[in-house]
Image (cartoon, rainbow, N blue to C red):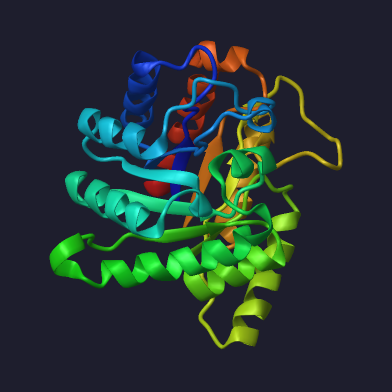
Length: 283
């Protein structure tokens, strides 16, 4: 199983130097994937969770491609209805080509109603637009002479049945976000049922989980996977591995803006996870 990291690309304290250090840390520790988030307009509903500045993902990943050499680069998740599908197809194809085939395109429908309004995109049609745009992007990439995209895996986010169905029909993988330890096993069973109903193969499972290390074990029933002592975090990763997940993405941002300015704590936890992962690979 591959392990990736969701790098904060927003909030005061984020700047080119911090992003570079994040990328070098993630690649240096041997992780397989570096991902960033997506917003275009920091409207009040966005700012409550992801305050400005917000670094646009394609621009950011293109720059980070130049300061890394091995780690794959991705979005978790690109909000598909915000951009014309042919623009997204072009940017994704170019980034994949310029980075040496390292792009993973995680996608979602979006949630910030005020941001949709600011962009003039109908919020109520975001699901239908996402489906339409994903089909248009895949169609564009078939013109290999023009787009020269190579293989770009599409990870479809969304924990609901609608998200699973979209992953089955239009994606290469299902990318649920921030789940509790017991929820994922149930969801994987549901994903298989939906795939059978659609007569389609079951997509790969590639969850994004929280990452927050605590000094004492967390025993609350609503504990998120990836939150707790390092032993709990490792046990959660092992459980995800046992479910057959191809990749798990660790998200170190937990709504505490001081973490943006002081990433060293997250880096220490990531180093411990990386050391354990390496020990499993050599067994």
